[in-house]
Each structure stands twice: as C-alpha cells, then as structure tokens.
Image (cartoon, rainbow, N blue to C red):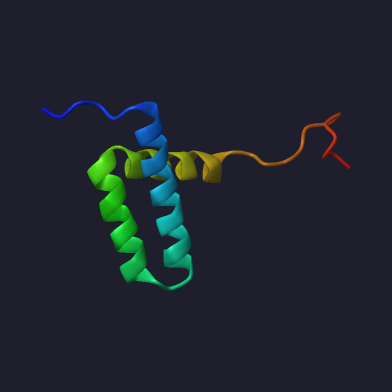
Length: 72
C-alpha cells in the first residue's frame, strides 16, 4: 500500500482539482481531465474532498449574521 501523501502533496492535489473545475467552467474538459489525473496520482482522496467541500458550501446559509460587518 502506498504511503499517505504529505500535507503539502495533499494541498497540491486539491489545488489541481480546483484548477480542473475552472477548466471545466471554461469549457476545456481535456485540460480539466489532465489536471484531475495529476491530482489523482498525487492523492486519490483530493477530488472527493473538494466535492464534499462544495456540497457543504452549497448547503450552508450564506446570509450574514446580525451584527457582522457584512450585515446591512
């Protein structure tokens, strides 16, 4: 079994996944797939973590709380 990636490697893999999402948004799926492949080679858990974070963000309430600087 392969060693668990270091924190720095894990962060690099997550960055590659996030860059891939940008390429998908730019309608560049081939470039996105290459980035995903690189990320998977570094840390196979990175893509699923990014997806989980996006799901969590999508489900959270982004309304500023009363008294916060962003509240009207």
